[in-house]
Structures are given as C-alpha cells and as structure tokens.
Length: 343
Ligand SMILES: Nc1nc2c(ncn2[C@@H]2O[C@H](COP(=O)(O)OP(=O)(O)O)[C@@H](O)[C@H]2O)c(=O)[nH]1
Ligand SMILES: [Mg+2]
Ligand SMILES: [Zn+2]
Image (cartoon, rainbow, N blue to C red):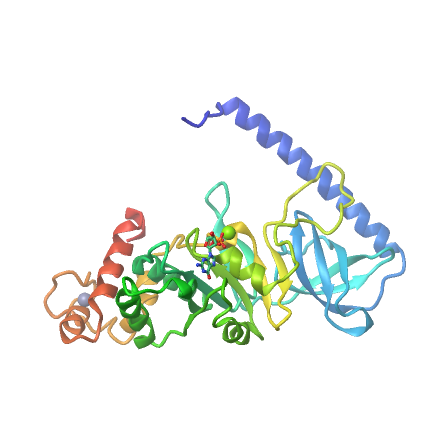
C-alpha cells in the first residue's frame, strides 16, 4: 500500500503544531527548573543517564549515599540534548526530582538517522558492540562485515557472538568454522554460545563485565533470548519507570540502560538492535576493513578504486593471500550499496 502523502499545507500545519507544543514544553520545563533551583538543591554529584524522554531524563546516582538510586531530572537550559549512557553532573531536589547541570564528554556516540534523515546520537559511551549471528538464520559474512564497518566507524570494539551453538551439526559445521576462522584470523574476538542450553554464557558474562554493551544482529539470531538470559526477571520492553510530570508530553524511550547482574551494562532498544550501516563514505568502508589499514595509500594511483588498476596494493594482497577473497567480495558489495554521492 502506498504511503499517504501529506500535502504542503498539512505538513506546514503539523510542523507548526509540533513547534508550538515544543515551545510550551520548553516553557513548562524552564519553570520547573526555576522552581527547583529556588528550593534546596543537594550538592553536585555524578550521575548516569539510564533513559530519556524528550526534555526529561532518568538519572542513576553514581556516588555518595544516593548511589544506585534513580531520579527524574530536568535539564538546565543551555545544556545539549542528553541520551542514554550520558554521564552527567546533577543536583538532587525535593521529591526525588533533580536538575542536570552539566554533561561530561562522551567517549563514543551511537547514531541513527531520525525521521528526517539527520544523524542523531541515540546512546553515549557504549564501548562494546556484540554482533550476534547463528547457524540459523544462515549467517551472511557481508552483514557481519557491515556491522564491523559500523563499529569501526563509531570507534567501538566489536565482539562476534555465534549463538545457537546447539544447532551446529555435520551439515553446517564446516561452513561455520570457515566463517569464524576468517574473523579469528583478523584478530577479532569470537565467542560461541547457546542462550538455550547455557554453553559459553559464563565466558560471555566475563566479556561483558566492565563494559557498556549493545547487542546487534539480524532478526531471529537470538538477541532477545540472550538479553533475557543475561537479565533474568527484567522486562526490557518497559518504558518510563513512572509517569512523568509533563502532561501531554508522552514520549517513549529510545533506549534504556540496564545493569547485568554479572557486571557491565547493556544499552538496549529495538532500534539499537537493528543498528546497521548508516551514512558512511568509501573511506569509512575502507577503514572498517582492518586488514586494509597497512595497504591503503600504497596503491600506484592515489584515487585507486582497487578494482583492476595496475599497481594496486589491495589486489596484490588479495593475490598473495593476505586479504581473504570473501572479505574483498564483501568490501565491494558494501561499496556498491552506498548511495552514489558517498563515493
Ligand atoms: N536452538 C536455539 N534456539 C535459540 C537460541 N536462542 C534463541 N533461539 C530461538 O531463536 C528464535 C529467535 O530468538 P529471538 O531471541 O527472538 O531472536 P531476536 O530476533 O534476535 O531477538 C526463537 O525461536 C528462540 O527460541 C539458542 O541458543 N538455541
Ligand atoms: Mg528480539
Ligand atoms: Zn588499489
């Protein structure tokens, strides 16, 4: 079915209404902050944003006697937008409501395009991308390579996780070993687990400890099963902990931060699990193939497309076996899928 197109007048009205709504929300917000600031505020302390709803966020106290407790917080005007995973300085007000006074620098940002195609951060300070695949649905090396490019682009370390190890049989074992071998040879950490049978789950917990992780991968590989097994008794679909004050400003969370009982944090939302390759250039794709790093810049022609040019360092490495054919094919496939303008 074709999407109903809004005409210009309708879109203009919607934009206008949304603009007015945002202005009213901002006004309420600054009044709320003023009221809080007028009262007794606690000392400045460190906090972790565990969820955000438009103009308000949920902050977990990181130090002092409040450590571990969760507070709804308003944002002081002039602060940048907050996302889940942000580390902040905040002050407690009365009735469990606080004010964020500063945002600490982010070590990483996971971005997604919004409805207008603009890249927006959705999570901050994630430092491990767990790329999940399984014997079934049949894994595609190309998809794994896309996630690796995305991870490299975001500056976040990847972990390759083969789930459903209980489904490895005589039929698929050889192909799976070849696939895993490609990534082990490149030096990527690879783990085999079964969310159902529990094999390898202890090693996985050890790998997650001390990190802020996201789980990504195609539908059906067992991400929900893994997360449920690692977070027993937690409903990851839950939105806000409580109804927030702002009437009519019902906004759903884009991501929420959870603590693994075995150590480490998970940032999770359906959107993040679908995190893929967005808005990368040819150079980004090349940078995402770690075995190319020492080869880029070594070709005879500076604008070499590594296609059939003489003196191409990548083609030579391919012929010598230093670049694996499957990875070269994957590289070409990803490049071919980029919009023309990104070349
Ligand atoms: N055999 C087997 N099946 C699994 C395992 N983990 C998940 N599944 C099954 O795979 C299917 C998809 O799992 P789900 O967690 O919904 O995957 P998601 O789409 O990535 O979130 C479900 O039928 C699960 O029961 C596993 O370790 N072994
Ligand atoms: Mg799922
Ligand atoms: Zn070349």
